[in-house]
Length: 140
Image 1 (cartoon, one colour):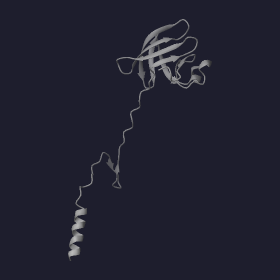
Image 2 (cartoon, rainbow, N blue to C red):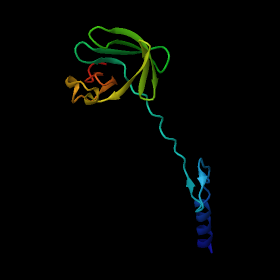
Image 3 (cartoon, one colour):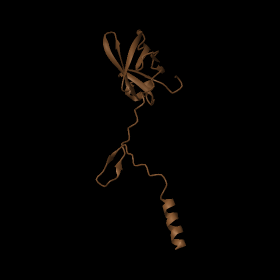
Image 4 (cartoon, rainbow, N blue to C red):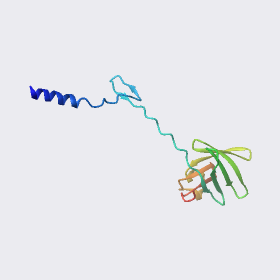
């Protein structure tokens, strides 16, 4: 009888711990298990700041401004034309107005620029075929 009393006391002690957490941030399934909702990570905006080099003197400098998603663009886009422009990020592109035309910088590789000198490069921004800028990771 004494052994039965000790065994019962030990069993009650083992079961007297804190109750398991039954809270849920998901929905119950028909099988009674909980489906956890996992939020997808917010995609990080690409970092285009720094100097991008084109061909024959073409260069693009991208600098952040005080307003998130806005950039100051300084570019020489051919031998005769250069200027400063306000750029606005949308997704992975930067849009800007140049000489009354809406232009867009989009991420590409060197082959997509259409410029032989940039072929094989992997980190580039292209406005249109024949106008692109690349960096090798050292120009930031």
